[in-house]
Length: 108
Image 1 (tube, rainbow, N blue to C red):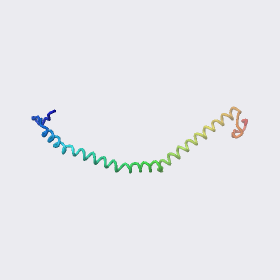
Image 2: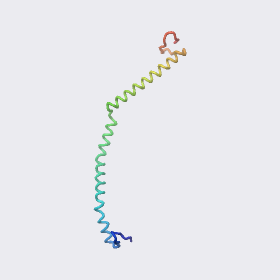
Image 3: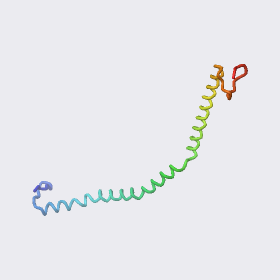
Image 4: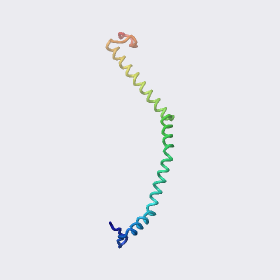
């Protein structure tokens, strides 16, 4: 059996060991109560957090809608520019497609 040191004294008796353990419980109760309270708050707020995340995922704010529309417009402009360059290259090389609108004087 190990002895418990209390101050300058060493307590060897089982009764003193039990008393020392029981005396330490009030010191730990604040930690336990705080942990239980925090866990209760976490459990209570989880459904709210999940629901709000679902709403955020399902809805689009006006700023997000504006960003998405701007992105779509930029991609469309890039596609048109790419097609115009390809058409100009075909017209310059004399390999124009029937749908190409080549300037006058260049073969179709």
